[in-house]
Amino acid sequence: MDASFSRDFDLPDAAATARLGAALAPLLAVGDLILLRGDLGAGKTALARALIGAHLAAHGLSEDVPSPTFTLVQTYESPALLIAHVDLYRIENADELRELGLAEMLDEGAAIVEWPERAAAELARLASARLDIALALVPEGGRRARLTASGSWAARLEGLTI
Ligand SMILES: Nc1ncnc2c1ncn2[C@@H]1O[C@H](COP(=O)(O)OP(=O)(O)O)[C@@H](O)[C@H]1O
Ligand SMILES: [Mg+2]
Image 1 (cartoon, rainbow, N blue to C red):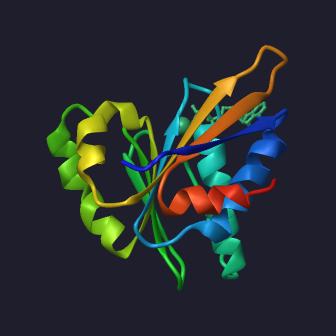
Image 2: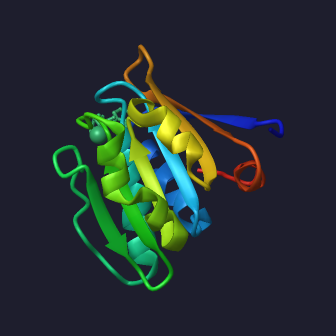
């Protein structure tokens, strides 16, 4: 595997998390898999919500972006892209992941996955351009995001500003 590249972003408040999501939105392409790691309350859904909202807004669309905790997946469609927002927190086995049809979704769109550690082996097998985002709480009250990627996402990360 080629060397990975990391960037850290300080996110002092929820607005900063939203800015990071909005900054990622124009970079998103078919075949992208964004993995969102971090404890409960770290801001995974907030980041996904901002990213999806900004993508839709860029196409003149507006939709609520609820947490997929109970539905496992929520999908969004713009003229450019299908986006699947997945939360694996409640997944019980790998078959459930197959039933979600994530591989097929990545053929025609992008996926953003919360709790990827629940199905790490299955996700690793998917053909995708992967961006790993780890969100951590910091004692002062904000969050820190570490974005790690190799391949095409590494180049996209280099130019990212929030
Ligand atoms: N950078 C930040 N600083 C402080 N609070 C934040 C930050 N980013 C998000 N939050 C808040 O954290 C809370 C939990 O976020 P959520 O996205 O539901 O977490 P998760 O999906 O990781 O469980 C939300 O109230 C959100 O507004
Ligand atoms: Mg969540």
